[in-house]
Length: 202
Image: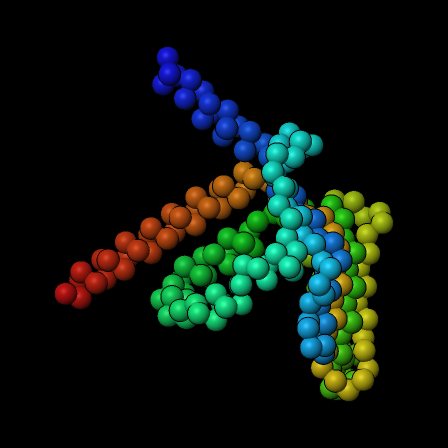
């Protein structure tokens, strides 16, 4: 009886997670390349786990103050670069998996100021970058009403980029679970190939 209850509970959890989604809301995020502190202090990132499209069951707030308390900069500095070098194949699989995720844009306000040391180059790359970003956004956006996307050239003979973004983005939990499964499978295959290679070398 207990075993049956456990099986039913696991099935229900799987169903709930398959019908849930991750909601990511970015508020007032600014990046300025030419200022001493590139990122503003008052941004906020809210991550929610939502089931049945409307019911939030988990909420995480990320702010600059909270990230500074985690001392991420020190952890990144102390990170062993050899780990990245030894896992280049796995890193490629990770990037490929991230690209395949179907992220829906619920709302976006995006402003970009871009300039280079060469005014002619700035005039050329602005429409190219603008077109690329517009294509990406148009493929992922749900409704086009009240969405803002502006990219503006800055002619001051200096390399700079300023970005302001606010928006809401969603991804289905089933996709994340499937991606984690595929990534774990790829990792096991890579490890198996390495063991086979080492064995043959011996």
